[in-house]
Image 1: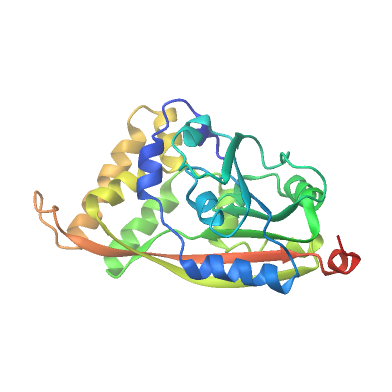
Image 2: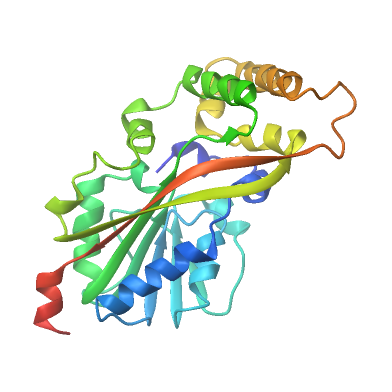
Length: 269
């Protein structure tokens, strides 16, 4: 998983308050796929759960949910729910017995995993009718094309682990899911949220590549964030000191991939 999320001092509150949320339609699509697979809703595991946004939503439809993250700081700030338990752990070693899990999820996280090891663990813990749901979203864009261009240039100037980020840029199309599961279904969504320029600045400050810049040269990542903040503000015609109350829409293209094993389904529990 992304190492900076696990570092002491990581701002989990900023992460939780500025990241995109997922539409109800996405969760309904997952539950519909589980029903088609003949699955149950006893136990779900949310891997790379972060602040628990997805974990607690899953608790609305499952008897029990386990949230796993490499970051104790993230889990210390994770949303509580009576049917949710959180554990520090890794995607490649899930805390569940063989054939006991109905759903494994990974929201904006799978590209950080050792994917072959993760899929082996999924196959180990899933019931025959179990399902894997992984999803990702691309870099944000705006209604204003100039602001979008500045934001894209900023994103692509940062020192990402491009081997992993390219998986996101290509909407997980280059991940060989069919080598691990024989049923693969893809769904596309658009994430939409109203935000403001200050929240946008706080959001980009949580990016792993910004933290990497600061690690390499103190304050470098923050300076880059300030620079793109100014470019986006000017592109939108917002004057200095007049950012309060100025709202705009932020969009992300989101891809959901659902996985199941039809052969195992026919074997029964």
